[in-house]
Length: 467
Image (cartoon, rainbow, N blue to C red; front, side, top):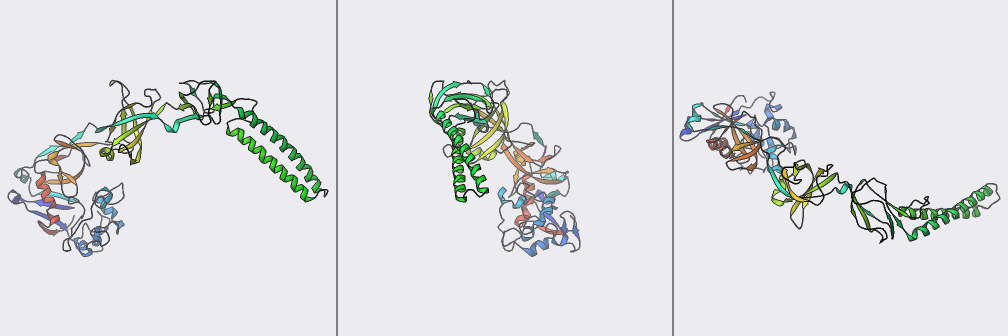
């Protein structure tokens, strides 16, 4: 841990002193960072200076995680770890970390990542806080979740939706269902009078008779051949004729099946069956009409579930992620909205609207919503607790947004914050806070200045034993 000690001279020209631990013997072990003291870059600054910068990755060699993955325990101990990408937060370029540009004669000592990493600002006495005008405020937990409003439209769940088409031309003789009816998968919906059905059935029956005759002849010839009373050539001819008859019978059977007709049935009409369970939501024909091949007869959907499709503006696309809760209005404001979670995000923007498509699955078992309803969906951006901090408390230290938490009357620890939303005089942030924390507002810039001085060569440094 590195301490910046702010003395009484801060009233005029602030001077900071940064205390670094001495280098221990090679046989000693650093429990905090889980490695030997001799090769612990957080404890042994001489080791850091000796190795210099990594020529391949640009980080100080002693801290280069790409070259030294065994440093993970140390980075975790310093609260410098990106769990999402499994690299140190300070070296996670997917999260915005940048490789430091270092002069040949300057090398960051201690943690090379964030100027605030592993540091605490300590005043020489509690009275100094009054002299420099430090003001503290209690931390406020945000009780209101942040939400944005996105244009949205409901539609049938495409995984539970079907267009029932006729497979061949025919006259609609009977329609067994109507709009709003619930049907089961396999249920007969309608029957068609198909002119070619009788022809196909006759062909199949004829092929069956030919197959039976060919099979009888093959059995006779096989018996004669086994007794040496028939030449092998004639037996092979009979077997070939049987194979031809079987192929013709199979083709005739498949032709009937492709139309959805059971060849074993005595019916003379072609039945149209429901492919899924659901409710009839569209009906396009009446009995007596002649339907063309592949024409849509009915549409069926499971209306107990709906998709809510979001059209997220490009400037808000980065705010929405899977798992966020979404509310969609049902009707009057007094009625509770329908709620679901984001389950899919498109990998590309719509080329025409330049919006990002997202999908929410809504439970509609109470039939409160209908497909093709337009509205404004409320997307809740926060999944966990958030905090509200005054704008005066937030400082940029060259790498991250930080605030200072008062650990005592003279000890102040920087805490990294992730700003979610700007309010009138405060920010809504995510951070590793405790409800009892107090934040520095007025005077936080002075603490930040002391924090980063040593990173640009200001201040004076000396060694001190211990951590």
